[in-house]
Amino acid sequence: MQFTKMEGAGNDYVYIDARSQQADWPELSRRMSDRHFGVGSDGLILIADSDVADLRMVMFNADGSQGEMCGNGIRCFAKYAIERDIAAPSDDGLTVETLAGIRTVVPTYDGPRITGARVAMGAPILAPARLPPPVLAYPFTMDGFDLPLSFVSMGNPHAVTFIEQAVAGFPLHTVGPKVEHHPMFPRRVNFEIVNVDAPGKLTARVWERGSGETLACGTGACAIAVAARLSGHCGDEVDITLPGGTLRIQWDGMGEVMMEGPATEVFTGEWAA
Ligand SMILES: N[C@@H](CCC[C@H](N)C(=O)O)C(=O)O
Image 1 (cartoon, rainbow, N blue to C red):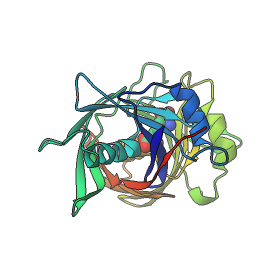
Image 2 (cartoon, rainbow, N blue to C red):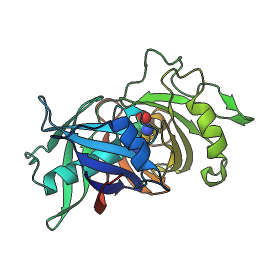
Image 3 (cartoon, helix red, strand yellow):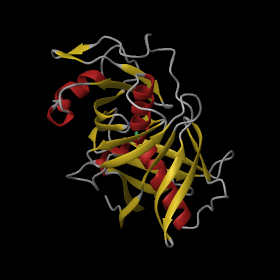
Image 4 (cartoon, rainbow, N blue to C red):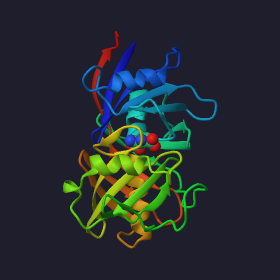
């Protein structure tokens, strides 16, 4: 089986053209994602046909669970599909069906190569049925840390907390899994810890549902931007620096969230196992 490893701001996935092949994809995601016995990735992303958009993106986390949407993945997905002539974007961009809805990706070029993309990420959902109100700064403590949580769904669930302590030194590997699996979140949750460095400049780390700590999360950055704007930490535009790179997010407080970031192909290979 041919595969391509790609990364967007260090959030790396294995990409497979699944238009004419079948496999146990959750199991394959678990095996390929393994950084010692597999390819090494945060999960698996499939290129599939769609009846309602140019293509359909199917994504699995490293534990084999399915995610509704992947912000860093969808930029690489568009690069993969366009550079291999699987689909051609219209002037408005490439439309991609996801479990979170149809997203539009406008690639950015350096000569003939796609180096990144701007993505219309949909409107945030601020009152998900199974999350408790209030949406912003819900009192929450874990392992002695005060972590007031803001709940934002970008089609997938996020809990964002703004903290004073530097995110670099925060024990995300012990606290992250406890938040992800907290009974408050029946579908588990992606967890973002954030420092406000200056208005419009944030630093964050992410514990992803199903994959653990990743170097960046596109939907997570969008959720952070929404929570930050609603909390008065930024205006319509914000740069969010994660361990793997910086994503620029725009949100006017009402409509779709726009995300801009890089997309890079790392290598291709053949899965023999
Ligand atoms: N890394 C992704 C999000 C992947 C899915 C997430 N772990 C979930 O289960 O919701 C991104 O860039 O958005």
